[in-house]
Length: 130
Image (cartoon, rainbow, N blue to C red; front, side, top):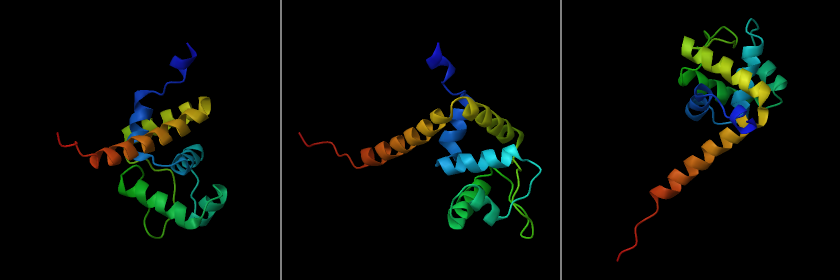
């Protein structure tokens, strides 16, 4: 069935729920993945992704901190450098799934935000006194 086909593999769902908080992060990862040999300056990335330099720097910082990608040496440019074999596999699956169902990725990111908002709101819901 079609709905079956468009449901994301578990590895993709887990990766998104753990590491991906924006469409821009997906685009950044897929850009790296699509040109694994290329080295990028922050300016090149921001112009390629039509985004601000600051936003790209923040995304990269997070990907490095979360051990999704290996951070380059201070003198080096940014490049595709998955932190582990598992991460590499997850990004490959993400790329494959995104090509087939680009809008599902966006849905999954927004669902993740909805869940976070719901959890946050629930933390402030007090039980009424009887």
